[in-house]
Image: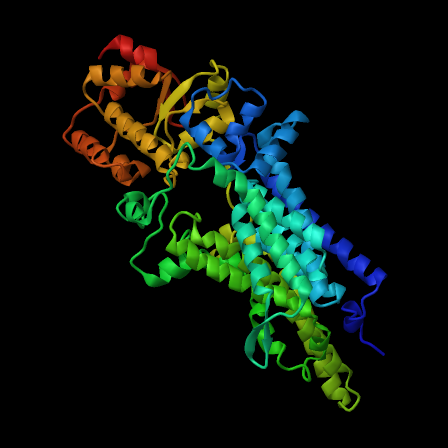
Length: 590
């Protein structure tokens, strides 16, 4: 007679069992999606952090007159993948505003990722409960970072890569090729990983030694997959260098404060541990909590050990050859991680090749490991030769572990949400990071009513939100200080330096020339803008010598023209942000 627990993880897959756990997987993914929607729509003027870079310019697809001659909008539109632009363009044609769509899209992508995560796991271990665990772990893990919820191109990598693994495990050629092509259209970095997986699938191990596969279908998959990837990338290769090229070199980056430890795009570090493991851009893991949370994910590290002892863990015998997709993925990711370091920054950032794939592999491995362990535990409880007392103890341990697992998985999001109120819970991570709410709604409404060619000058952090919430251009803002393409960033640098010099200048003529050169309509400042402390600690510090010269001027007791203009040219003020009319600054002369 099987125990209640053993019936719960019925190891004999059936349509009823699979259907139940599949529906439960979708339910959990949907509930997590609803939590994200609650955060996204809780307040007006809320946006995901990274969406501010990749979504604001899409408003052009609705109104082509927006952001005219805007360097920032032109750049981010130029680097947007074709698939990403197409999806948002289709939504825009349906009348869905891009910002609203960016909040709805992650729910759909999360559901698709849950479906394929369930399917991949079932191909590896045909136990529906394992598929449910993998799907749930994956859905909860995605809450720990802003990748999926950013609704940027990298949000598509999770459903597309899991779909690729599923069709590869099933040996479904055409769907497999289709997913590779879609990866290239949405997020080419993950397509490189998939192509690497196909290459490694040609290698088999025989008595501890590698040898090439003798399976013809493996070569067919690999050859056609590489061709599909090449076809997708061919238009980019024929196009040549980008209008905002060339890509920054490693030698250039090492000389730029932007890539230093405290820079806007921190990359290099004096600590090897930080540089190779924990740096957000150069490290293999970046933020470990994004990879290893929720806590049951750690159990995935035990899978290689469990597979070596089928006698102790009988369910290991049901693990199929499809499990090879996990080490193939890891090997491909590591090779590309190394290649990205060797070719900085031609393959973009090294971390993009490891962090995402590790999370997916670990979620599946953890689900398989937990199912194997629970099955072994339940079988131990059933042993007839055990004494009644020992049976009772075994059952208590089994129920206790199952209860702990259930509590961790089901209650984990709630526990993580409490971390801000209870510091000891900070180890549980931060669910749904990256949703930001603008602090100046009246200013947004005012600027949104101005002509479409309005240009705003501001260095305070609130400038990051203006293109998204006002659909009006900013000259510079920290969020858009992305230095990977020199054709873009060289122009951006000039703009920042010009603005620093004009913003802190005591010469009215220099301010007038700046306003006329760029066509500035409004200037936004706050009380901290004209303090040396602001300049010493703000993102402007990486633009030298302009920032230091401006700070020295303030420390010497000089009063900038713009500071003098605050009293007479202020149009409105909200939460410390002051909107100045540029025409007034010129006419007053000061």
